[in-house]
Length: 496
Image (cartoon, rainbow, N blue to C red; front, top):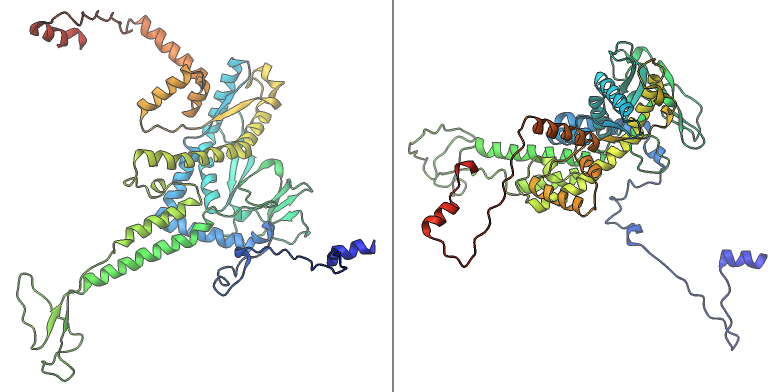
């Protein structure tokens, strides 16, 4: 036992050779260049630490990042446009519910009632606000509450609160399951949220520190988990905040240089040495120049005009590269972030957008699981208690309603090519109508029923186009006269 412990601590003894001598033990050394600390990289890695996700995202750090991200979005047009575009592309006009039960009549009724309720509480607008808050604040909170002033039978409402309000203003028990404003169980599931009744940034917040203890069932916490054990989110714009500041500083510096060059029309200078043969002039004196006039200079002096060389040619390239780096942390291509596709062709635009569309689909799936499914479950719990609102046959299975969410589709740049490819996929049985309609955010069954109604009405009104038989082609060997050829090629009035 002692020998084994000795070998673990000090290594095993070198094997003996035939002459009784022992070979020197081999020492294996592995070294990573990135793990070395040198004079050149010491300052670069000075802020690297081994903090946990909760310690790194402390309340003070999150508050500082939130304030700076909000300031940048409020004052930087690029930051504002990026956040707005991301919310509009992700949420669009809002998700649409589709039930997948065998009772079609009940599906249509429930979908209609849920859509009416979602419109009454402005659900799409609140989802867009939550998506914007996730970019600026890193997280968004929604409280499922009761609103008796709603016009719908279901009085469920979604109340949004900022991340600043989810905190515990008084000291509580400190432990591994206690995060700022959130109490977790042993498995990491939130069981309670502490929400301030007044925003800490309000004028009246200094007079009260009252907060509510809300069960986790009534609170929606929408954020992205980047590290294991992370319980609070940080702004998605965090890596880009120094870049936004750099972009604004460079733009202002370029503008100042251009203004300085434009303000000074010219400078008097002389090549004569000090105390040389040149007339005396007043230092820093100004001379007003008249248009289309010749001007005589004092003896020994020359007029040199300052050339306005700002902005430099590298200004546009610098802005482009900086915006590309800013948008990369959001998986957004340059032309969407900058609102400029002048340097794109069709192929490069499609390639960049594929990455962006995939990121949008991932985000929509996250929203469906974290927010929409819980909202729908809470809506069902209240709807089944209202007499006559839902079909009787659906009440018994209200806890297990299979459903999916439809989002706005993306318009193709070339509709003709897309339609041809779609027809080919359907003919080869490599896709389905449900999948093709879902790409554009539509329900295939509803679309086909609507199309059947349109076709039936067209036939009823006699508006169906008549298909004429194609004319038989004449023999290629038979000569065709000029007049006959003109009659064949010329369109008839019926063709119009």
